Image (cartoon, rainbow, N blue to C red; front, side, top):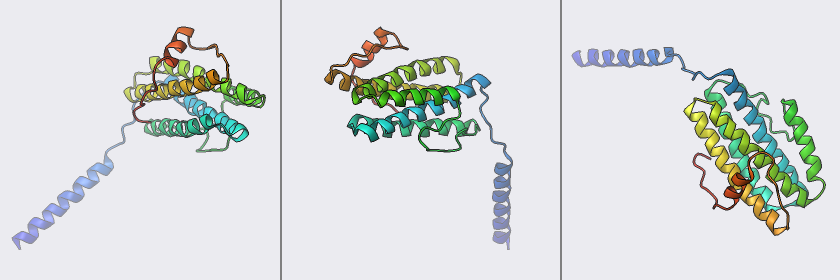
Length: 204
């Protein structure tokens, strides 16, 4: 009888603990509106890069685009994971439809870049360098803006990936006799990136 009582007591204690866990509120990290807007912008910017590269690959069948498409998909997933952590709804509602965005500036830029890709495969490579150039500057600014360690880590990893993509596109440009002049980061930053080896980007 005593053993039965002890078992019943332990069972009730376990249920009580489970109830307490269920009652514990989910703590959502507090970040500013500006930081949230930057993360939402990054979500669509990363998808834009993916979609432009997917279009370029379908048009020219260049391996460099196929390789980077996979990486961009990982970038999007990493951003969505952080949006979920901060309880932010996806403005695209999980859409993978190419060329679909909610931010007008990104929608316009996508159309402009697709038009450039249509010109030639050489121009498509320069478009790739342009996108990564722009992404690196945006990620640098995002890191400066946030006080959330996990977001800072996300942006660092995304920037690591963008630098690798820049190296890959620069290699293609060099083979084709093309020269890219950075429009967002400095020439010194660009030269340093393309002159250093590919990095291993943790978390992506």
